[in-house]
Image 1 (cartoon, rainbow, N blue to C red):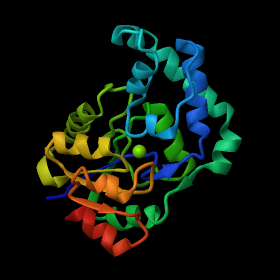
Image 2 (cartoon, rainbow, N blue to C red):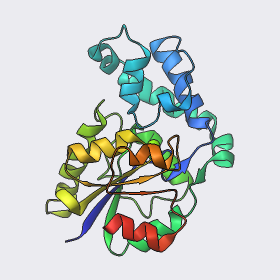
Image 3 (cartoon, rainbow, N blue to C red):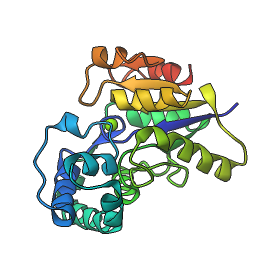
Image 4 (cartoon, protein in one colour):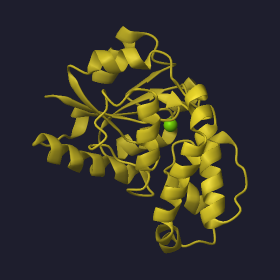
Length: 228
Ligand SMILES: [Mg+2]
């Protein structure tokens, strides 16, 4: 059975050198009010809606939703305003391009990310990853505040797009944080962790992913870990 690989973006496929976090902070400040600056692990593995909710403890989920469209438009404008720096600083994680290329003939690949959809698609476009990932099948930070709820959303979109269902070990959730591992496990998928983000290999292994690697530079080992 053909596999469906659901890729996290930040810390797994790519990084933006802090430019997108800066744009997001500015957009939150403009739409929801002054926001404290946080260390990187505060954001890791969370959906943008979850980050907003945890940043503004006094806002109800309904308050967050009410201004979500404004936030999304503002965030996109803030990132576009930083496009020159974004293009200069954004980069793929080591080995990732070869892995995406190697898996393309044998697997369907889509994003599963806490990023809101327009931001995810902008990052993927800038780094030329759109040929490898089906963004229509992906699930994004504006779809739900809970990352675990993004997996069924992506699976429903995959069923719609490809005409058959995907479940269990035919689905692989790939990411760089405990939240990525937990969201795959909560949905009974295979989970693969790459220690290219804010967490060490040991920290990721403590959450018992099906496979964990320091990075994706060993092509054969990475492909084997993903396909299981
Ligand atoms: Mg990540």
